[in-house]
Length: 130
Image (cartoon, rainbow, N blue to C red):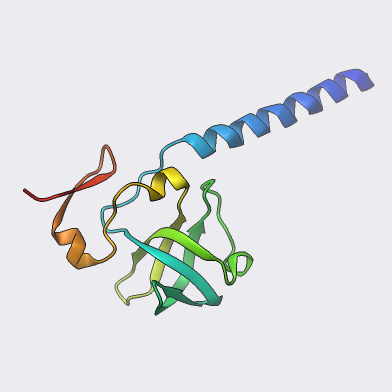
């Protein structure tokens, strides 16, 4: 009986570990309204994006590189490369901490840059207008 329980627990741990690995490798889809920046949480909800003062919206979601939710207090003072969206009040609403492969893709850093580019939502690639 104990051996069956132990085997079941080992199987559950292995399945959970492999599911986490698979989740880290899946491509994430970012909205076309997202912008790229360097985020530093100063003191929640206060932050800076590319050195400019910013503020997290109530209920703002920060997703880590593994796509799991991250509490703003756990990344206090860290400089993170992120994609983020802003709500109608100018508050930072959604944040995705980028993996190195995601950060390597071109992405606009301002609304003005986004207007000069074209976004393909299927491939998640921005390119210059022709």
